[in-house]
Length: 223
Image (tube, rainbow, N blue to C red; front, side):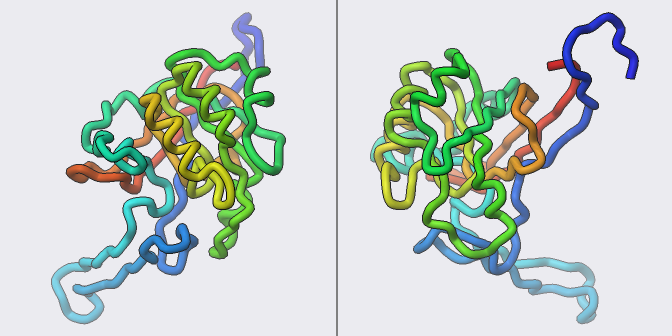
């Protein structure tokens, strides 16, 4: 690849799908609706077309949380500005195997208005349909730190920004009260730390507490 006098490492231009595929039997949060997919019209059975019935929870697979998810008077996801999840984004790789803590985040010089996605060991868990209670989450102190930094959007590579045993409610409330839009259920296994362009659009459902989304990254240029 020709350098053209630019400094840095070359990155091939490409789209990277960071969504998990919704399918029957896939992992879901305990107590949330299981995923159901049934073909109700079938060309193979003599119908003119194929039509399926989808039965999924609002927090299935790759999805976004609305403030309404944890705040009584919070906005529904249909009120989300589309540019909250479209635009420049930074992927930060986390080394801690328990949780994302404020001390680790301070070295990354996070700035106001940024969109941040956290890549953790969680991305390896998508190979299994068994729910992992010990997934890496955003600790409450880190959520408060991100709130003070006034970032725009945060994403993580498992089904919740808050932990199963710790900081489940507290982390969600700290982020959502600060006006931070939340993306959960990402698969960042094949994504390197760095800067990208994010496109993530949830299904537009009136007064939704959450909704499945398709999330992709665009990698181009030098970084």
